[in-house]
Length: 316
Image (cartoon, rainbow, N blue to C red; front, side):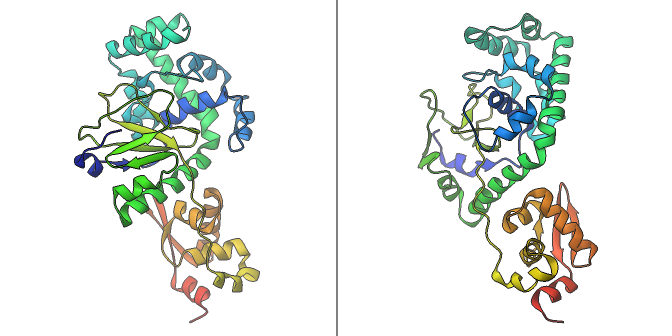
């Protein structure tokens, strides 16, 4: 990927997991035979859920090679429903072109012809199947997906805020190699993409494994989806050992981590616990009057109350 000076200023990390990229990449992982410690338990559970949706989606999302760009529209960054609306609004020419490319290497079912023609009923059925798959297969795992993606995102955006985009791009080594002005990745085919001032959206993904994924159509917004890799959590300072026998060591670590206000995702990262565990511990501490929580748009930020600070420091 070839950058200009303007591209660096327009390069950013996505705000969270993309529901349609995770749909496509998880479908590919369901057909993967190689063991994957992070995904093996999910595969065992997922194979019993949403089987009808999986059967319908499988021809459109083959385990290897090309899949249509219209299945992962940029609008999905705003949520599943916005993404599905964009899929259903795909121009007929794009449907025909991309399904034709898919059919060159993969046999397609008979209903794919009406999908390529933009037949309204077939598009609506595709939308319903995407919702069903997300609800039954991805829904139960979505908190874990969000937590892993958020830990990766915080690491990258924190580096970008403290330094610059150059510094952030260097955090991807050895998966990506930043040799200004070119970002290089191992990829199944040789490609050169020129960003031409549009910037690059980097999308951390739970189900993307080993190598990044990009759109084939270079007229679309440049996107690079990459495996989310959570950095090693920072261990809380040893001062929390004093409160361990009273609160339990994990809850004492959560309290210690809140010396600075943090969102639930940040709390999970810095205390070294899962997202659900961080939320539960924050609720208990809030009920004891040690923590106050406030909602900021789609996130909850936690901070110590004066009583919580006094307990932590031993003063008051």
